[in-house]
Image (cartoon, protein in one colour):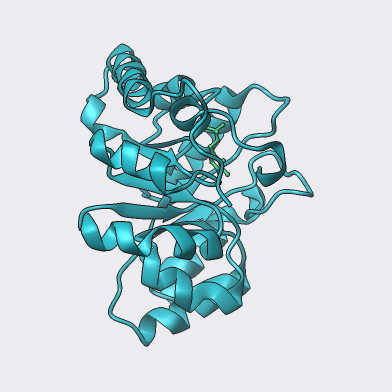
Length: 232
Ligand SMILES: *Cc1c(COP(=O)(O)O)cnc(C)c1O
């Protein structure tokens, strides 16, 4: 089902060089490198790749599908208790309960109905995930996320009316635009709402994201190699 790690993909070496790039970007921005978490995006990659990353010391991983994460992670999470999983893809309301059993961070709260379902599910549960709100900074119709003009009211509603553990914001900038503008924009929305966590930056642009205040970067390809084209 999963492709083997590609020939010549050295996950430990890739992790080391991504971390070195992260530290360089943080220092250039006058930031403490420890203030940026590397989320290793392991979607489409199989157990061998995950184990290689864990063996190299990586503990924070991102997946974009609940079902795929359920197929891959429970035994590894049980064996390595400090592994933390971030959900990076859209969450259907009928999968909220399952997502809360597996994920430590939900990065993709993107609509009011999901906020209400999450609040109801958390009331019935002992788990305390961190939640990030996805902002559609590019206002792209095909992309998920809260529109910038609705962000302040949505954030307040999640915090004050629903009591959700909202820690910050995430965005995926449009592919054909300068990401720095989107990173600065996301930073400003978080700042005026008193939110500390900013998940932004992927393989192509994580050093830029760190310069603009990212506290989490989501890096897949630079660690695990290319993914099969269909699986996004
Ligand atoms: C796949 C994915 C990433 C990682 O992308 P790379 O370009 O492979 O680093 C980051 N964030 C989200 C939301 C993703 O779906």
